[in-house]
Image (cartoon, rainbow, N blue to C red; front, side, top):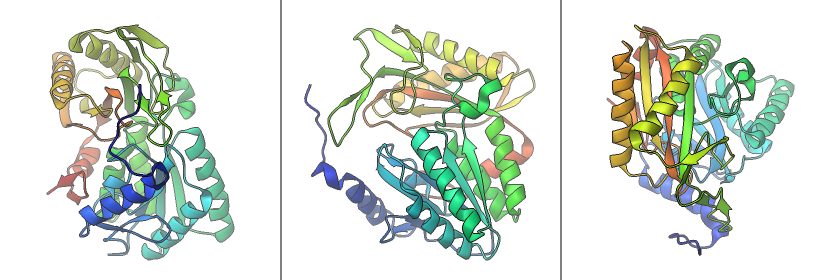
Length: 336
């Protein structure tokens, strides 16, 4: 089937996406000559700054969360591709200087290309003696057990983590404290994805994962990596139950726990469907005596026109909840 998308020259996709983001949000961010997406609040006070990296093609993530109270600099790569270390080290140098000595939290999603860039960048950080700490998000429960947590993929959990880390920074926490707070959230979150249909790569038209007409796959990775959970399509409640049970088991959620629920649409799943899924997940946790203290239902981190969603649970405490509820102003998340 021929790809149908409203694009121009495929070679110009990343440039045009970033230009559009900047033109639509001039009060919040700008894009510099190195294609870095920079918050207009950069250097507003002495505080820890937040820098992240990742490929474009997953809009609104990651650059759509640059702004007051979240990411200070996003280093975008090409479609589904990590940026190179030179762009990352440039971003970290800018953020480190803007922090007034407070330092930078460098958030990297656990994907092969991102990790390679992140590790090479940190080697350069050591040579330049910059005040940087790297944190890796890795909450996909499908590809590794919690015992092998370091090998898990990063999914939508990076976005609430940005919010919590940035709020801790704005509250005056130092770099080690910001890292520890963000890492506590990181260790208490889990995501499981399901796909009904794969996506097309917008530069090549190639299909990313092919599913049969009556198939779905639980455990699908961000870029179409198989999760081993291929099965006939089930109802919203049946699918949610399978995924929620797996997340509850992985996180060892118990009566009395406070929990965040996020339902993240993959790109073409309707908001109607996402709300039906959220309803089931909410009622399931509620029936177990688990209190839902935070929630978000939206397209947050997508994969082009893929059909499906990511179900995210995180165990919360009062401090994490305080930072989650703190104000922010970004193109795609605003809290007053």
